[in-house]
Length: 213
Image (cartoon, rainbow, N blue to C red):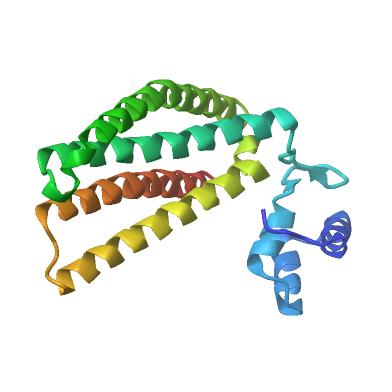
């Protein structure tokens, strides 16, 4: 819900108490300069039920437990995405070796082993926490409006979008310079696949929430 002011909250409550319709209240507020999102957010805070006084809907609140769960969810997501990319990069390096860095084969072996170990630990934690939170949200739909959930989701979308922009910029730069080798193109594809997958999943999730709302 968009941020509101005490004056707006008080006005909407008083108008509902005096029997004004929701459409009339929204039109008056928009005419006064309030945005449609702000007015809808406050009006949706009251249930449309027959009762002498406005009945507030339950609102999302932030608890330490909820913040911990979402921080674990998104940290394990970032960690898993990074090490998946690192592992795929190492596999590309093995399939398409560069003679200039062939002396670092042992280092790549250590890198692959660490990435596999990280994925075996962090991805199951991410999947388990994602499933647990999905069940919790299904039982309590109001938790979709959790501030920490929405902030971390949009932060993730920003990181994924920035990664995709950088990835495509690098691709175009190398194409213009005639330096787009198969090895480079494979790595560009890896980054695009991971960042694009994360972006699509969370953007689709947000759109689905808007439709349900």
